[in-house]
Image (tube, rainbow over all chains, first blue to last red; front, side, top):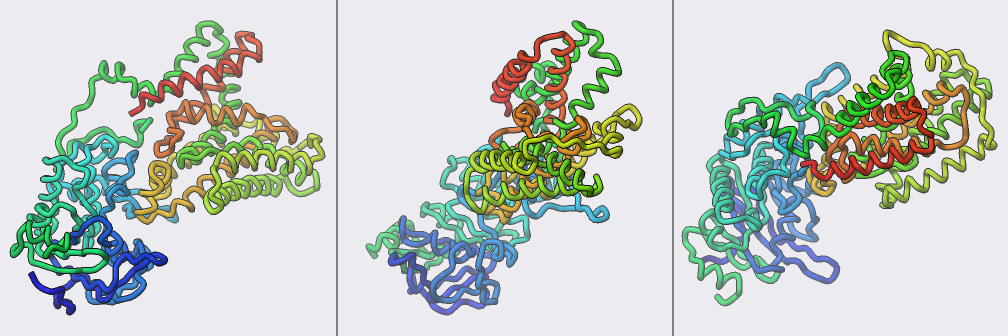
Length: 254
Length: 334
């Protein structure tokens, strides 16, 4: 393990320094430095209430940090809302707020970025193109669903999670942020989603992963950041650490 | 979805596994099939029933009269569909029709041209819809309360500006609109057909339509994906108000005067047609053809009962029974 280094490596897709956030008198986190390298899976772990989720929300524009700087893709990024972050290339896979049950797989994959054809002053949906591209997006990530015209309601939890990840990655995002992507999934479904995350990395997409599951974090990620009580207390390479060390870092026993 | 247009038949697809199409027998045994097609099945059933018991029902003249009578309800049901698709409800719809009619009558009586009167009527009802939408979204008041409030408010407004008196509207334009025909259908039927086509395209072939269904399905998720759900809702209520304005013009043309009393059966029937049409009252799934056929079915029911000389008192009972039955069948919708 090493001390938390303060200078961002040159290949950081996202780097923040001295970041702090409080809600009224309650400090969510203070003076946090954090970097995610391009093309890597970067995990953030920590106990409940350590500040991981709030940190992530600050990174993707849901919350505004009270102090410190965030750089995304080499530029200072003051995203005032998730839409701006999305436009800059950060997609978030939300835990529950991901898909619209009553819409089809293809409609969900293209929601709010529909393909349209212009006919005079009117813009009509190009449903054929969206279905074709949806199939291509799914097969590129080896995601199996019965049909892109199937309603999402009828899919399993794992399939739904796969589709929201596909949605996030499919927009050409540079960075995909996932908050507990396998929290509600069974063993097989978790394995599928993990395979999907590896596939994303193979395709050069950077991933930030929040997880409680230390084994999963060690399996999936390249770099692990540990938060405790609102501080970033350590960062380690996943290949150089053990489960026991992570537990010690998270609980503060080390 | 309820009608075949939005769920194209399964075509062979790459990357996804093949889905076999259900056999006809399996389809007929599937309650969700009946739920999706409730309005069509109901309409066909009524046509057969009334056709046997009262052959006059199937005469060309009666069918034309039926379509003519259905036109107003079809237009209103479309407006209601957009609102219900966002998981809202517009209770002020019939009152807006009344106010639109009163404004049309008064503006026309004041010596303005009838076209200006029609335009003002539509503008007024659209403004009511806009107000509904703004109060519901920006004011964060439940749709039920807001539209109940505007129902009462605009009913009062209509009574105040009209003094409670009907206004005769003797316009050749409106007379032609009501009685003229092109091809097999009267003009009001063409208006309804145009409304169906435009609304269908808006719902299924535009980004607005998808965003509408997303907003109705899961507003929070839709907002998380950057859809401006408040704007979508306001647009839906404004469309509903616009449809009320069109219906007001058709109504004044049909009865030749602007009556400051609301036709409550229009409101209930518009909701009934939407339910019969397979639109989920919880939002997120909708079609246009379904409610339009639902409106036709309700009109056919009234028409057939009248032909069978059943007392008009039985009509609300029959409509109520059918709507509750339809809602029961809807529970099987997948």
